[in-house]
Amino acid sequence: MSKVYDAVVVGSGAAGGMAATELCLKGLQVLLLEAGPNLDIGTAFHHHVKPYQFPFRGQIRPLERAKYNYAASEWNKPHFVNELENPYTGKKFAWVRARAVGGKTLHWGLVSLRFSPRDFQAARYDGYGENWPVTYEDIEPYYTRVEKMIGVCGAADHLENNPDSSFLKPVPFTCPEWIFKRSVEASIPERHVIHGRSATATEPINGRAPCHYCGHCGRVCNVAASFSSAGVLLPIAAKTGNLTLRPNAVAWKVLLDPENNARSVLFVDRNTRQTQEALGKVIVLGAGSLESTRILLNSGGADHPVGLANSSGALGKYFCEQIMAGDIMGIIPQLRGSRNTGGDARPEGTGFYIPRFRNLREKRADFIRGYGFEGGGGSSEFPGFARKLPGFGAKFKEEVKRNYATIVSIGSFGEILPRAENYVEIDPVVRDAWGIPVLKFNIEWGPNDLAMAKDMVETQREMFKAAGVEVLSERTDPLPPGWSIHEAGTARMGDDPGKSVLDKFNRCHDVKNLYVTDAASFVNSTEKNPTLTILALSMRAADHIAEEMRQGNFG
Image (cartoon, one colour):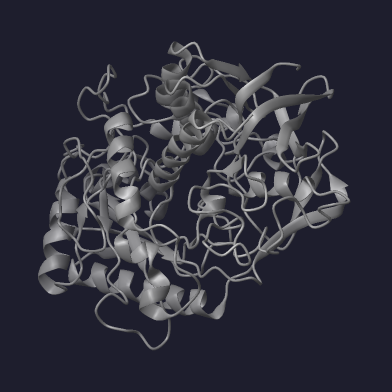
């Protein structure tokens, strides 16, 4: 590819999709590289097919199971990677990867939480790690811009550690959610049970029709009522006439010119296995935390033996995410017999959220930082709780119906401390199907993480007891690293080039026209879902790139 674009962006999900769209809106000619195919969100997925219409009730066929991660199903599998073609090595890690235009935004859980002022300066409060080189005040205008662009529903709660957004109307609570909220808040005043904050259009926004409550968000929203890069961002970029989309382009490495500037991205065609170069005045990596870091690590050479932009030695290190330590499900007895079905078709992320309450005003002796819970009340179209009930036949079916509107459940998300000991590196031997060296994982839960996990299990029981919920099932062991799908921190930003990979605008300290705009840039993960912050940082980086371009500093 001989054309030199103003910007070459790698990855079409939250980070890459936002960067490409904002740069196109600013008049730059952008080449967007995506490792997977360009799937039609309206026709490529089985949105409304019933489980009983699949041979294995929507589950992946047993003979195909090894190809897919735990999140894949017959409804959404076209955009997930084939694990056999895309291996990784090292310690146990659940790496959920999507390769298709739109990336993981095609199937994410839609939870959209702003980080708080405290989150950006966490080290100031407990002395651990580093503060971000940006403050909440720096990012707040971008949160607002993003929210008005993509649509986030919720309610203003005026909580210190959970800043309010520019909200669309919330999805109403179900009966079990109201009962749970009132019981918990009356018994444990420092616990707040608030509306879920979800990237779902609950009313018309920017030409998008609102959610029609099919309840099938996880199967890929075919009308773009829930936010995805493919359904919301990239159509905006395409209308500018400044976007060139190149699907099936598996990025391998960034190549430099003799002046140590980024010259191009070397990629492999997914179908032909031929290598090509994509030339750009600016290179933006937004392929997802671990993939962007993999590209930088693979970009090393004689002059960069430990990877590109790694003079600090921090590349690949300080991995962070959230530990999913426990979940619990039960029945609210006073609702038995109710035939209300108000919860069976709501969009994802719109149940309730229990914000962090640990280590805000009090200080725990056993762990630092904190956690939150995501939950909801009511049952899905095909209620999973039925597997927990005894019985058979007509009486069993009647018992399921009798408890359909009684169910409440919560799951936990706790902040993992970024540690140098948690890192990824390039495996010296193993390569993927395109001949690109793969990642090796050196990641495990630390003492602080496990102490927090123990407390998460205890507090979920405490809240269920306060609400008078009869427990049907409970998981008390932490899920493996990676399960949250919120990986972050392997190319962190900072003011000190000796401790960080990126500056406060997501630009590499070592290569001035190379940016990384996904969660690899995070200094710490917080207990909050990362996507809204990825979008805000990527939008901010695009502003910086456009201004640098205007001043003639690139190309």
